[in-house]
Length: 435
Image 1 (tube, rainbow, N blue to C red):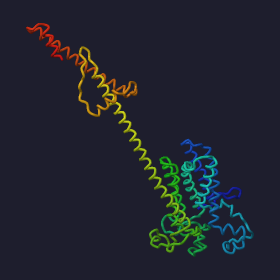
Image 2 (image 1 turned 135 degrees about the vertical axis):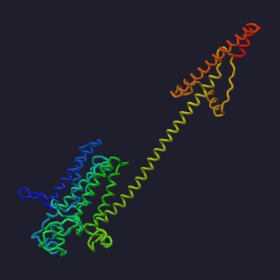
Image 3 (image 1 turned 180 degrees about the vertical axis):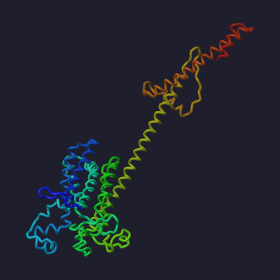
Image 4 (image 1 turned 120 degrees about the vertical axis):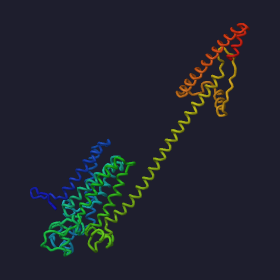
């Protein structure tokens, strides 16, 4: 653990504040890069991120002071009462309000950062007339990345620590850290010890799932079905994971709605006996958000799936209607062409009606076509193509019939020449044979 990385002219640079700064810069860079990728104004996103940093820090600090109000209010207004009840080890000599603004030394609440950031996003979207949910989807992976670096800062500052454990990955914070002081107060260690007992590295648990959330939300952002899906998924996943990690937290100043101890669960997870399992303030807030966000995800997923199904059915129906309409036009045109061509007189023959067996449905179509005034039939490319194709087939068949007539006439003539009846009789016989 290195709570102070280095000093410049006697001014310490804390690990916590450095990790927060790195997380902000990394998150802003990731958001700006994605904005370029999808064609969103990069400068607009950069301006928004600056305000989000300010709003997030203010929200995180305000919520922290509300949760730990006695350590910030009394030093400013009644330092004697503060020394008597909360600060016996290092009593103050005068009132000071510095703890209210000393952000760099720690004292931030993640949910406060989210609340302050969301309110800032809402204000910014109203001011610049942009849609809130699409912009939230752009920013949520960056927010998860900021959580990853922020929890690494918590590990360096030894805050947000876990309960005692004998697991091999348990960490032993050095003397002077907050876990060491807590265990000394509980008479678990001596003041002469150099390290505290092993505890769960809950800061690293939070950092791990924060990094996992970044990759998941980035993947989802490229495949989302609707605006706000990435944002709602974060609202569901983060509180759920946070509630689970809260079971391993050992810092008692978090606050509890009520205290419930489950010894079977403590034994299963390898936690100390009489460890409080539920319900911390963070767990209470998280569970409410999980229920609301989960219900919203189920509803929206059902709604958009149903909408997509209806859209596909509508497109299929339109394609079927278009196909039926095209078939009807082609069929009507074909029947009309056959009727007109069959009733026209052919060369070298007397005009005779052609009797064809036509279905009743086709008779109606023929009648409708024959009674239609000239120019009523639409000059459509499909009709023209069908008409040309059928007409060519019919004329080709008509030519074959004429060839048959000529062959028959020739055969008949030969028969007449060979017979005793004479040329004229053979010609008439050949003509009858051709007809």
